[in-house]
Amino acid sequence: MNNHNIQDFVRGWIVGDFEPSLVKSKDLEVAIQFYKEGDHEPKHVHKIAKEITVIAYGRVTMSGTEYAKGDIVEIPPGVPTDFFAIEDSATVVIKTPSAPSDKYLVG
Image 1 (cartoon, rainbow, N blue to C red):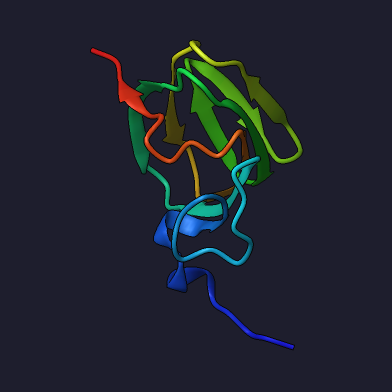
Image 2 (cartoon, one colour):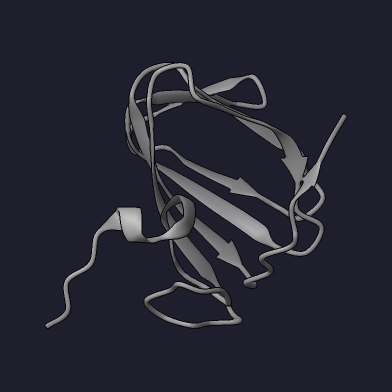
């Protein structure tokens, strides 16, 4: 058995084609991310990867729509989104394929 802490990984990304990772994969990326109320990410788009965001707890907005615990947001390639934590929240994010450089800010 090996033990790890989420803080040992870049922004919670634990699986994917990058280091460090628990599982090296070109097929997918997985992250567990924690946000404090008011945290946000600017509008961006993935040109290659499909992203699936699961709201583990809390309330957030993505592209102006509010989501809460248990909601799953599927974002196809080419569809921009932003992120805002209405309250302390956690997400599980899955992207396929693993494309670490596939994030483009949108004006």
